[in-house]
Image 1 (cartoon, each protein chain N blue to C red):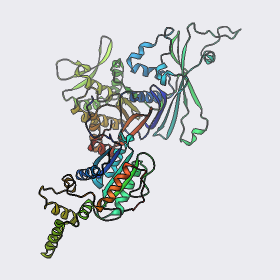
Image 2: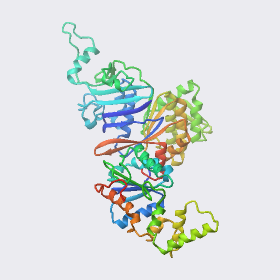
Image 3: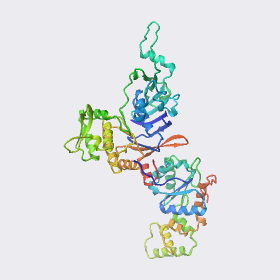
Image 4: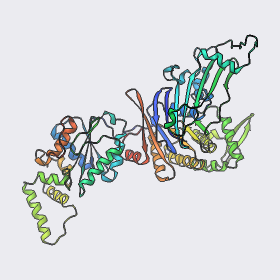
Amino acid sequence: MYLSFSVSNFRGIHSLSISHLSDLNLVVGKNNVGKTALLEALFVHSGGGNPSLALAVQGFRATELGRIELGLASTPPWESLFADLDMTHPIIFESEERENRFRVTQIQPVLDADLSKLYARLQKPADPQTQSWPRPALPPSVLTLISEEPRRSRQSAQKPRRRAQSYLILDEQGPRVFPFPATPPFQTFFVSDTAHATINEDSELYGRLARGKTEHLLLDSLRKIEPHLKDVREVSSGGQPMLMADIGLDRLIPLSVMGGGILRLSRLLIRIANAENGVVLVDEIDNGFHHSALPSLWRVVSQSATRSNVQIIATTHSLECIKAAHQVFLEQFDTTFELHRIDRRNGKLVCTSYDTEILGAAIDSELEVR
Amino acid sequence: MTSTYEGRRIDQPHLVLVEGEDDVSFFQELIAFLQLPGFQVWDTKGKYGFRADLSAVAKDPHFHILDSLGIARDNDDDPAGTERSIRGALADAGLSLPSGPLASSPGTPTIVYTTLPRPGITGEIEDLCLEAVADSPELTCVHAYFACLSQQGVPSPHDLSKAKVQTFLASKADLTSRPGQAARKGYWSWSSPAFDQLARFARLLADPSAQGNPGDK
């Protein structure tokens, strides 16, 4: 779980630091200040040394997935991860975590000059006499992710650390990661605003809960928002596993038919339950919910997160969502809550954080907090 | 889901924080009399919510447009405690500290604070109002009225200054009971020396380079 996090040269963020990260965090700010990019950065950093997550976050912004056209694209598919599309400056993420751990992740493209060395490690020489390696016919694109061995204090940052380096390679053989990355420090899920291609993942994650006999906890939470819901079941339809809802009719209906809000909440709660001691990142958490349902949303999210010891970092534009969160977390002494607003000032991004008391004062005084 | 926000917004270079809605009227009238442009006056929830209120203001997305921030609070019966409270709240909000009352802090926004009726003196805004009308025939009658009550064995009100101001205002044709409402009706003479220190407070906010010494009258 994160206590603080800083980002350099990622998407539209040249530099941003966010501190005072609590159990539940709401990130607000005007359009294009980097709220979603912050979540994406946290997601990539959470993966430890897995560079494929850098490509995964391109998929969260659904339109960017289609750009991966090896050999045809004039730019690598991760170009837009770099601030100002400038890949000469590395992306750097730094975090302080609750486990008294400080981690640094650095992402940069591999230059042509270093590709031979990399391919030498990847493949045995084709011709042992000349010790030459078959280079791909099409120019490969390679991204490397360097993760420093975690430190126990900021002070030790000066000392050189062991670094694990992993590569995401796009060539004729398709995308692959080399070497196999280390296990992430904790489980992290990203719940994107764009509901795409997660049906299989939903079913798989729900299956894990069912196998652990904890799916009833999910059902209890969902009923607080949708009282007509009697059961949720994983059913195979046309060879595809999908989640179906029992609402008392003579047949089950797809969960998605119950509306965007309940589907989104299901996806969120399934991931919280599967992310024990980890982090769940949620873009536009209030999307699909009527304002009157927002206090209930926060209650079930808070209860689920507390039960699984999961940190939530979510974005919103909605004042109703902020007020609902504040109202709920005033009553809950065992969960800390913080609002973080990102502002662009004189071309630089700054983050302002509000604890529950100061947020309450701002809301009571009708001050703008978004 | 988004909504249009129509709350308070910092849109002037000078902001004064006072205690309660009536004090807002009082200071707005004083600033209008002094013809100082670019001021906003906001109320806070008094001494108990002041720390959080000040921090919330300091975190406002438009706080950076301020040239100066002023704080004016009643001393009540604890002048030293009031000043400690103001300085503590400024420190908690991460704002710069002036050297004392009626002094400008370095940096932007510059911070100026004062306490009422005057720094180090017990009392409240009503004491300044009474001082401003000390020579009026109405106040002579007010003093006589409370002296009479005392002679008759009627216990004094808990807040005698407030009671005297209300009694003074009861003598006016257009009735009101609060100093700020009375200011709106023009019942206080702003040119009275009683308001000199408040005027200096406002002028310091309008022009922080007009630095004064703490405790100046």
